[in-house]
Length: 306
Ligand code: R5P
Image 1 (cartoon, rainbow, N blue to C red):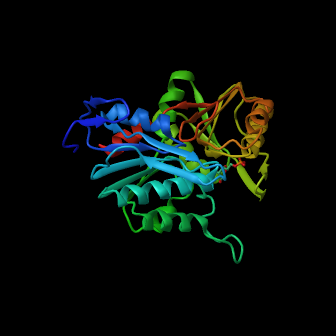
Image 2: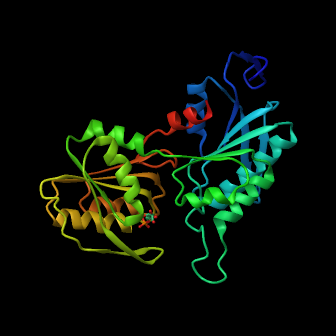
Image 3: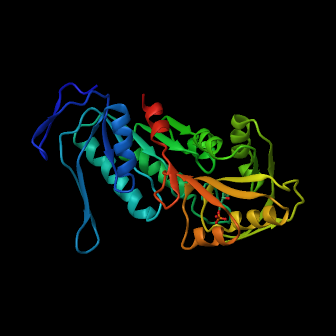
């Protein structure tokens, strides 16, 4: 609990916040951090992050830190810069006197490299976990990790939250009779989570990944004639998975195809390719900032911090 009302050096005023934490929004998640701070009536700590002329990162915490701190920072593109900034922030507030540091990582970069697929490969997700812990994080809060085995890379508490219910409530407002389709077996549990909330059917397609940017989806006759199909995935990266699935659904006579995901990584022209494949709408959360990040995960994070 903040013991005193905080004096803002920046604005020269006393800030009447009553929450439990001081929140820091890293440069990739500032709006989200502001939303969470507002919902919890917590204090949003002013920071300065910029680059020196040679490209090195400069970070300054502009106020005295509290004992209980929260940092919110997604580690999407540019992943290496965002991860390094997060490590610097954790280490810095630890050195400045923070005792409990909850680190919220709405999108966990390198999460798809959670095992050695080929001999000699780096298990990047495990290395990132180790760096976070060594820097001084006391707890990690993530949203829909690509593989929940990543939680086991940490020796500190990890909360993995699901944004699927938020997506379900959003779909409920938009579509009367949706049919949920997972574009591969891995996404089936996400699809089922949403279908259970909406009380609607769920099916899945079979996908084989040929390379990081090439997937093959088995053409499967689905009973989607006249249906409002909704493709659900955790991540949309190159868009290849969604394009294949959308084409199959359209060929099978779906009335409309809506696409939804938690993490809109959206590499290059992924959105354009998706809309060109006949998709009517794309809905994502704001774990990453994008044109389609319409659902805020702030309530989910606020609830977890309460
Ligand atoms: C894979 O297992 C994930 O759930 C997504 O399906 C995948 O990351 C999407 O990648 P892309 O958009 O490049 O097909």
